[in-house]
Image (cartoon, rainbow, N blue to C red; front, side, top):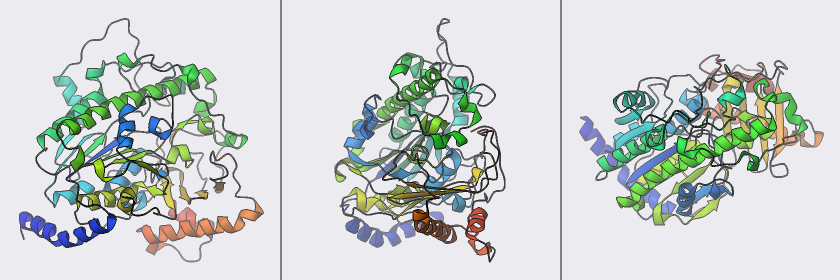
Length: 508
C-alpha cells in the first residue's frame, strides 16, 4: 500500500468511530486545526485570569474568556525535556523514554505530528522543542532555536544605544544566582522587534498564513519566562520590585533550600520576581500577535488553541527558585483551552495532566486516536458533558529519583534521597536517604506541613504508595523486569531509577 493510500485508508477507517466519539463528547463539529502554545517555566499564579491582580496578561486572559481554564493541571515532570516529550507523545516520561534533561528524543516514539501527518495535516513547530537531537519527529515545516541563530546572521538586529545597560550572558551556577536570575531587572540586548519571542511569533504567523486553506497543526514553544527572564529594552521598569509578592515558606523548608539561593537578600528576591513578571508580560504580548492573526484570518472558530506552561516555577515558594520539585507551584501549570463558541467560558477544577492533551487534540480534530497514548481526553470536560476526569495525577523527576501521586485531597512524594538534589541544587546537607512526604492539599494548600509520620495517616500513606506502585506497573515498559520480593521502598526506588541511566548535570 502506498503512503497516499495508507493515509486515505486511515482517514476512512476512523470516520465512523470518531463521529460517534464526537457525538458522545458533545462536540457537534470537529475542529479543523490545532495550535499548541507553550510557555517555558510559567507559573499559573502569574496570570490575570488565574487571579493575579499585578500581572498584565490581556491576551491569555482573553483566551481564557473564550474557553476553559483548568486550575488543577499538572506537568508529568518538573523539567523541560521530559515534560515536553511526554506532552508530545501522550505518554508518561518513563514510557516516552525521556526522564533526564539531556536525553535525545527516541526515534521510535510516535508524536502528535507524526500521527496527524497520516491524516493530511500540515505540521510545523516554531521555537523550543528540546528534542536533544536533530530529528524533526514528524514536523515538516520548522523554525528551531538553531534556525534562529542562522536568522540573526542574515538579519542583523538594530544597534542599541550605548548608554543602555543589558543583562550579561546567562551562566547558571558559574555566576551567583542574583546574576543568572536577573535580580537587577536588566533587559536582553534587543529591542522588541528583534527579540527572540517576537520573531518566533512572526514565524508562527507565517506558518498559519501559508497553511490557512488546509488543516494544520502548529507547536509554538516560547522561551519566556525561563531564566534569565528575557524581555526587550522597551519593557524596562514595568514592575516595581517592592510591590512583588514574597512567599515566606516554613521551617520545614530550611533543610531543602539549595545553597545557591540561601544568600539572596529580600531585595534581590523581589528583583528576580519583578524580572519574571516582566518576561511573562512580554510572552503574553507575543501570544496576542498569534491570536490576533487567527482572528484576522477567520480561523479562530475553526482552531483548537491550547496554552500551557511546560511546568510551573517557584518564586521564593519554599524559600527557593526554579522548578525540579513536586510542590504545587513547581509541578502545577497553567492550562487554557480555547474553542471558539464551542466551549462555554468557565473554570474547571478537575485533576488533569499533560498526557491528557494528545487524546484531547485527536478527539477534537475528529481523527483516530494514537494507539500508544496513556492519557484521557478532556473533551467531555470542555463541552460540559462531564465534571469528573481522574482520581489522581502522576509526575516524576528521575534526575532526583523522585515521583508524586496527587489526588483531590492528598499528595504523596517519594524520593530515594541518594543524592543531595541534582543539577547544581545541592543543599550542602548531603544525601538524606529515602524520604516520604505527605500533604493534605485541601487543609494545607501551601504544603507547609509534611504529615507522613503521623500515625493517623498511616493508612492513607500506604494507600498512596500502593497507587504509585500500581501506576508504575501499569505504565512503565520496565515493569516485567521488576525483581520479586522487594519491599515497598525497594520497589519504588527501583522504578525511580532513570531508564536512561544516571545523569547529574550542572545546568538546566
